[in-house]
Length: 487
Image (cartoon, rainbow, N blue to C red; front, top):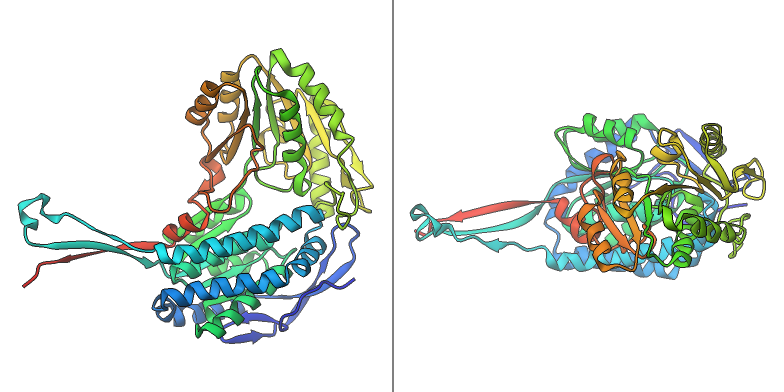
């Protein structure tokens, strides 16, 4: 089986593509078969890419607005023509179900369009300096200027979308960008960067405006510790994100570090809709999403009918080959991840949790063993399956006396990305918006709902900064104040 991609061999560094000393297999997580080989970069290639990015930073900052916009729209059009091939490639390298990979490509197209639109919104304002007598007769205004070279490090679960959320806003802001994909999933991002560089050439922009390097932690370290970098944008685990923040200081760092997302079910909720949301929101992308449903907090008065409704739906979740359009849960990214998730489930059960559905390795999900869609009830609070990010198809349900106790339980976590509440009460909905200490509160919908144009990010250990093209462009620019006393 060979992945469908068309780009030069090697890494897109500087004006061309450079060959690496070694390559590594990229495997289809569903059956372990090799679908292609990817170049393996080293700190040598990383520093060469940084040199090239620094060399073109002034040129990129000076590109006309229409040029930056044209590069993004031209890339969107090229990706639109290739959308089905990108979908097939994402299925093979991530093992995500086909339905989720289709959504990923469509969201990537939306993000490219939205970033192109933000180019025209990069402007400043005048400032009334004469609020003090010392400012009489003076003119003040500010503009936004590119922050400099951007390093974007993406995770494996949505490699194309995560990369474009770092690359497209950087281009819109006038910053050269250097992307590092996850080692398991480099192929779609390599192809995307090739399309961006082709669009840049057609627009008269330098190829080194967009570069990509692969490799392990040593490559990432070489990138984030270089003082020539203006900003680092990272999506991944909290532990790695915290280390990057320490290593990169004082460089600006934007972190999206995941969560253990909660869904609250009030006593007045539509229980059928809430149960549907847990199934949709807990198992999409095989649970490998930072805002998939992990914790469900249900008011005591409705917990039994809710669990009955939820358990009755688990059997309809199709498990199997991700290439099948009906599949909703398939392989996790690798066997190590599956074993970790299963270990957390086993530990929770040993500590007293009750298995409502699933709870075992599932040979339908992966020839080597995958995790079945699992619902656990009464999971102790000190279990990893409750307090950490499981990143697999596991949902944990706990009973609370009232909705305020549910909000307290949400806030007790060290994470705070998204949370949702199901209720028929407008007062409860607004109370959730006021009380929940998270980056996004979703009412009567899955907490995994994300429009790619909204501000997206978390608080506490879920990170800092915001994605979404408008907000990322603001993060990747700095204000420059001009104060003029006319002669």
